[in-house]
Amino acid sequence: MRKLLALMTGGGSLLGGASLAQANGWNMPVGVTDLSAEIYSLHMTIFWICVVIGVVVFGVMFYSLFKFRRSKGAKSSHFHENTTVEVIWTAVPLLILVGMAVPATATLQKMYDTSDAELDVMITGQQWRWRYEYLGEDVAFNSNMSTPRAQISGEEDRGEHYLLEVDEPLVLPINRKVRFLLTADDVIHSWWVPDFAVKQDTIPGFINENWVRINEPGIYRGQCAELCGMDHGFMPIVVHAMEEDDFDDWLAERKEAAEAEAMGVDREWEMAELMERGEQVYGSICASCHQADGSGSPPAFPALAGNQELIDDVDWHIDVVLNGVSGTAMPAFRSNLNPVELAAVVTYSRNAWGNDTGDAVQPAEIVELLE
Image (cartoon, rainbow, N blue to C red):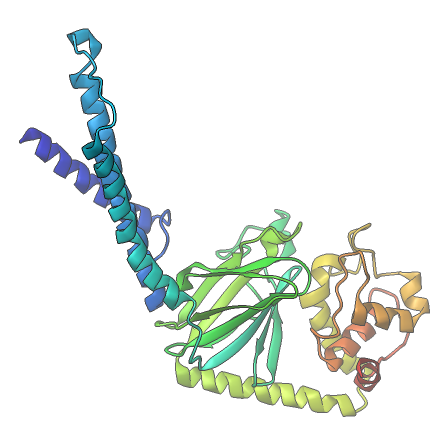
């Protein structure tokens, strides 16, 4: 009776431990999707099966060591080719494995079923940011970490969401099936949001699929889960899940803004307009490598302030921004930024920090080079 009470107490402690682990973030989250809850349930079921196996195996082992110890005069039995024992220790593990494989297979089938999606989002990993494109909606943007460099260097106190905050979150509707198409421009990244139970590698030259249907509105955070370079830890993911009507309004606004910027390609931009827009683009895209003051981080990231090659040759400067530099960390931005953004950031970097070339690169010039 005392042994039974001890076992029950131990089981209660294990259950309490699981709850404590969940509360402290040691266990995987239940998440905010039906699939993430199912994965969590499967995880806990298999966990408890393993716990029971461990208790039984070690219980028998320690009981045998204690009960039949040599100091009490016990002598080991000798037997060979006991068919009954061999059948038992083969059949029981097989039944356990089958019992775990059946629900696991059903869950895996759901995880890989991307059919009947109501919205398609292309996710592209880049060193070190994410690009999101709403396919068929003409809406696309880059998402960059917005944690100030002063916090990273220790000059300021760290914020609540240190290294887990971005300038442009991915916005998704709740109660709709969203299919993700994932790839990368440079190296392997991994798009991971624990609350969605989504963790998918993004591989250059390949397109992987995954999906989510979010049940609750809110802000959900994740990170790149692949070692993708020296700034791997500065590649966060933030998803803003909205009510369906709010999402539709947001998407309509972004489409209008994209159309208005596309129309700007055909007009002549004033220098002040280009500088203002270019400062925004530079701050979100370029400053992480070349620094906000253009001083760079030589030799990997050369200074732009006072860079004589940049100042003397506008065509070379535009080519570097459009096509990148082979063998370096400078990527090509021709497919990641629109003509207005490209013209603006080139104009800004040619006239900021004392460069003062007076050059105003127009979006129409960029369009010609992209054709």
